[in-house]
Amino acid sequence: MRVPIIAGNWKMFKDETEAFELATEIRKRLKDVSSKRIVLCPPFTSIPSVKKAIQGSSIYLGAQNMHWEEEGAYTGEISAKMLLGSGCSFVILGHSERRAHFGETDQVINKKIKKAIEEGLTPIVCVGEILEERESGKTESVVEEQIRGAFEGINKKEIEKLVIAYEPVWAIGTGKTATPKQANEVHRFIREKISLLFNQEIAQKVCILYGGSVKPENSKDLLAEPDIDGALVGGASLRADSFDQIVRSD
Ligand code: 13P
Image (cartoon, rainbow, N blue to C red; front, top):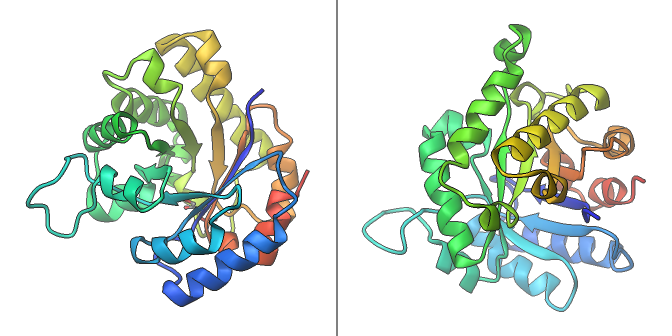
C-alpha cells in the first residue's frame, strides 16, 4: 500500500557534468524498476543537468532545501516555485546538517513544509537524535518534539502529502547504522505519533524512510522491517552501482 521510496541525497557533491553522468548511469541501470519511487536530489546548480539526464524516465527530481517565502530579498536562497519550475517534485527539509550548520529550527522547518505543500512539492522531512540523546534515552522525546514542531498547524490533507525520514545523526556518514530493529522501533514510534496527532488511516499511509549509512550491505535488512518504507541515502547514492544495489535490495 505504501510505495517504497529510495532517495539519493547528493549533498554538496557532483558538479553539472558529474551529475549528468551519474544520473544517466542511474537511469540506465534502473530502467526496469517500477515497484519503487526513485528520487535524485542533486545540489541546486546540478538540477538542470539531472533533469536532462532523467527526462522521460520515471525517476523524480528533488532539491535539498528551499526558502519559505514566495520571493524577496533573501540573498542565496531558492523558492519553492523556482524548484518546481526547474522540474523538482520533492524537497528535503530539516536535514540534520541544515539544523546543525545553518541553525534551522523546527519553526523554520515548519514554515518551509507549509510552503512546499502549498506549492505542490513533496517535502521529505528529516528528524533524528544525536548520539548523546540516544545514549541518555532521549531518542523518543527528541523525535516527538521535532515532529510536533515541524507539523504544527499542518492539517490532515497536508500531512498525507509529505514523507518523513528518520535519520539518527550518529549514523550519518559515520558507517554506524542503526540496527534494523533499532530503526524500526523509532519508525513505529513516529507512526504512532502521526496516528495520535492526525489519525490511524493517515499514519498507515505516510511513508517513513530511514537514513544513515545505508549501503548495499545493510539495505535489505533495513527495508525488510515493517515500518521502514524506503531509504534516504547519502554517500552510497554517489555511485550508480551502490545506489542500484540498494534500490534492488529486496
Ligand atoms: P549517509 O548515507 O552518507 O550516512 O548520509 C545519510 C544522509 O544524511 C541522507 O540524507
